[in-house]
Amino acid sequence: MTDRRAWLRGRRPAPPAELAAAIDEACAAVAPDGSADRGAAGEDPTDILARAAADRLAAALRHPGRVRASAFELLTADALLTYASEAALESSDPVAGLDAIAEALFPGAQDS
Image (cartoon, rainbow, N blue to C red; front, side, top):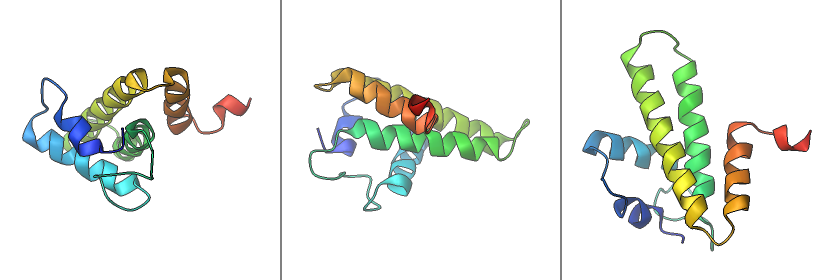
């Protein structure tokens, strides 16, 4: 499963347009090739979705409090984390996918 956009378009219910655009933008920001369309050959979307979730969570935490922009970043992070979890569970190795999510959110924690 390498085409993240097609995979995301298949999710039901579909996210609102503004959230879908934020998800695409977040994926493009962390994708090695800068594209939200595809990852490296054979790459499952779990990794990019998880890294994008961690990135958006970090963005929300840079502006704590009752800030509308931070709330939207948090909503985007939540959607990305949900989609990363779904992708992991649909993959051929769900445990590895869930490990990738944990590593994206808590780098190095699994080394302890």
